[in-house]
Image (cartoon, rainbow, N blue to C red; front, top):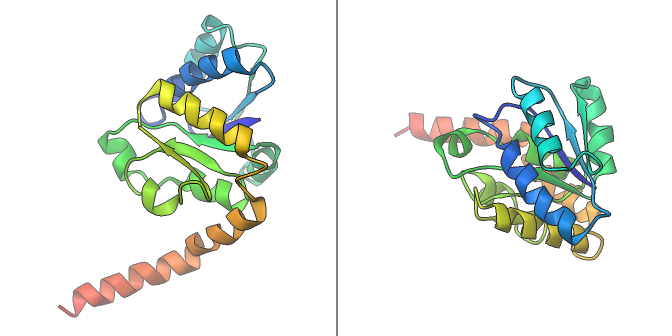
Length: 183
């Protein structure tokens, strides 16, 4: 089971890239499913794309859910995905969905852009792939799903996620601020 959760707006979250990669995945493994949780301006467009790619039997769009329900959906997944291009939006956006997945012990597959390399430890808490590359995303997701039980250990991923606790991040920002201020 794969999960994408977040805003459904193609200008900032290329879910179309994910769906095209998922089409490749389904050709190789018809048992894999994708859950898309969230809403946004391109919801209907993504629904249409799912149909045009003949993925209706493999992809479930559940729409917006209350924030307190997100952890339950993440817990269902073997792998979480954050599809990205190598653009300014991806470089500038803090990938909160990665932190939320790691907190639940779920490995993440995403593009190697922006802070993602710093946040995600390759082969420990997920996989980094070439951003914007449909084939690389598909292969990374297949690899992660096939090895999720052997390579990725939920308890280790949860421990790894502790370093991204907001209290720790705030302290890092404060330290940085006071260091800069003293210059």
